[in-house]
Length: 229
Image 1: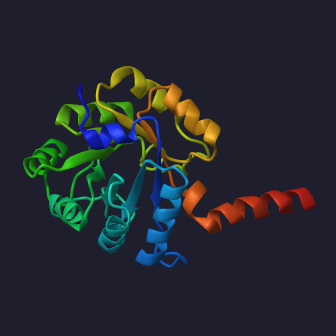
Image 2 (image 1 turned 120 degrees about the horizontal axis):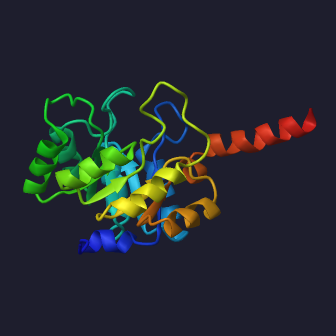
């Protein structure tokens, strides 16, 4: 399958997720734009961003860099770009690729994943499906998405998410998918990212380990506290 040029530009490279949670010190479009510019300067081939204001600001400052956009509505169920209306707004704000929930859970607008993708493709929008399992990835591929991402692995059940990336899922998707897929979720080191590419990932998305200073600081501080005990 021939990938669109925007997806080809992501192949083999790093996408940096520039997202801050509400209430965090960096939760501001100007801060996230600066983070995106720093990521681009460091060699990122793409940016992933949430929120219409952040997407618009980052798009204005990073023309030519593929931008994956989304919105989040709550924290339970289908919360990543949950409706067609949300996806259209994300595209209008400047995203080149719109990330949507790619699971089989009920959507607030009552549409199926396939119906959602068909409507977005009718508007010429490239669609990334965020999934948690191999079955969901295959269903998203069948629905016609342009790219799949392992974003939700570990986050759709009742147990706390694991510490490390789901490289087993990455390996399985590398064997069964014909569309490109992104490895995303809990990637902490360059070595883990390189391993994901060797397993067949088209690109790797890293967020917290690069763009959330409070979490990075907490990891260092925890290591020193443990050493000092």
